[in-house]
Length: 221
Image 1 (cartoon, one colour):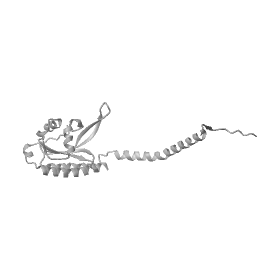
Image 2 (cartoon, rainbow, N blue to C red):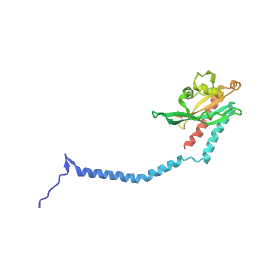
Image 3 (cartoon, rainbow, N blue to C red):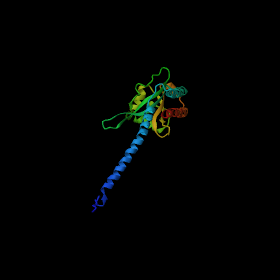
Image 4 (cartoon, one colour):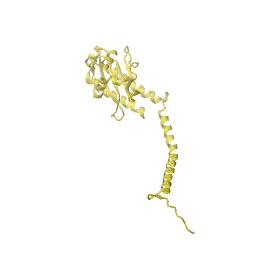
């Protein structure tokens, strides 16, 4: 009986063998996905659960209460009108898809008779405050007279809130590398500003920033 052999090779390549190998690879990938899928779903559920905010969370209330307490202590110690913490954030996009850079007031302590500024300090476009950014990145909380600033939006903003003297310092993340906000102390009276000790203000601003940064870092854990 004569046996007929079938040549599976084309240009030296075993067609059927190659397809069989591809099939085995696809089966292996599919098996891996099936095995890994439950674990991925569990991680997604865990991540989603972590992001859920519970307004009754005691840790949240205690953390931000301590931030406000630090600001109040600083304001009283420096005999200032306001002490405030702001945070940088994104908010919306321009037509070209680029993100809008903004900042918002998150914590503030004010003395009696001085109005708070929370209403006008939400979702503020950062591009209007380049002069303020220049002062922030210097990381030098030496008090500055509002009248000595060059004409800019930042100066007009301070004047509209009756600020005659201010100190500003960046707030950084837990690693100490990323500036994610800033802290200010403001004096709204010329008589108060005359008694300000620049070195003492700088020392206390740096000290209170350290405590506030430590508290804010806890909310990301």
